[in-house]
Image 1 (cartoon, rainbow, N blue to C red):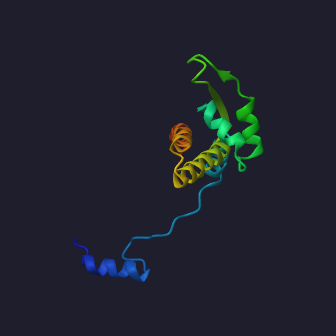
Image 2: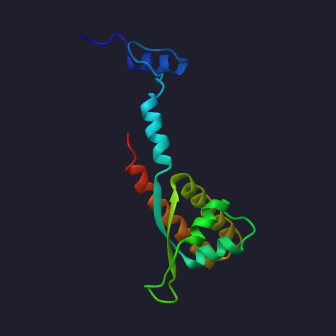
Image 3: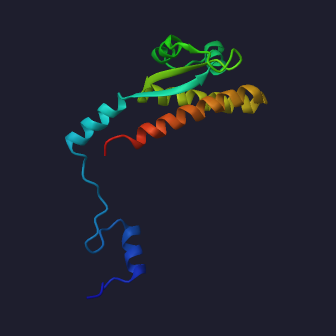
Length: 144
């Protein structure tokens, strides 16, 4: 049995916002259990490494990430195992806080690039990349 609709008829129906044949374009709302799992995943801790220079930039700037995120960042111990010139901190934040900090470093990297300060822009970009990797890993392990 063949479909009586030709491809251009189907495209016209889609453009008109109509339901064509048996195709339904609406999505049903998410079940309550899935919503609860996603809400629990947002509170899941995310761990990433920030260089001390990036933390110092955030501390010295007039605009900082949320106060709770900065308190957690500054409260994490300094790791000096790579030498005194490469100090870093292994920070653990919630998924929402990590997303806020990621957004902060994205905006800071853009601002420093605009004014031509490449060293600080690179520091912010490296911090952003570290957080983005941690967020990506957390998203991959989130329950479906």
